[in-house]
Length: 76
Image (tube, rainbow, N blue to C red; front, side):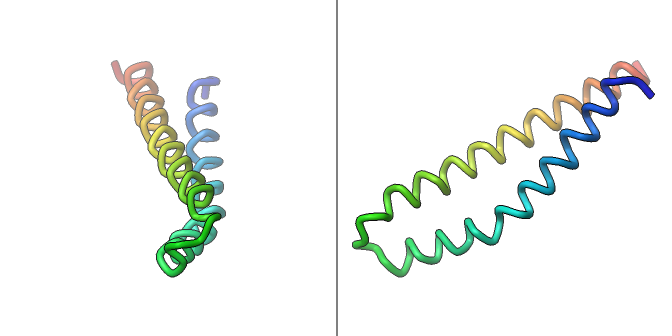
């Protein structure tokens, strides 16, 4: 197996571990934002949730790109 395949597998697995480990915290932040609509800390909590969503989306897009690139190199 060459380096591209190991990078792809590692990137996807590490991303899943980080995603799963942060998921419960983000759910709690969203619940707190819903309950305390007038709280002064809500903008910073909302920003962290939005950044988490953006980074998860970027991780997914890069993962798809790496998988397609691996298939292109091995089967194309």
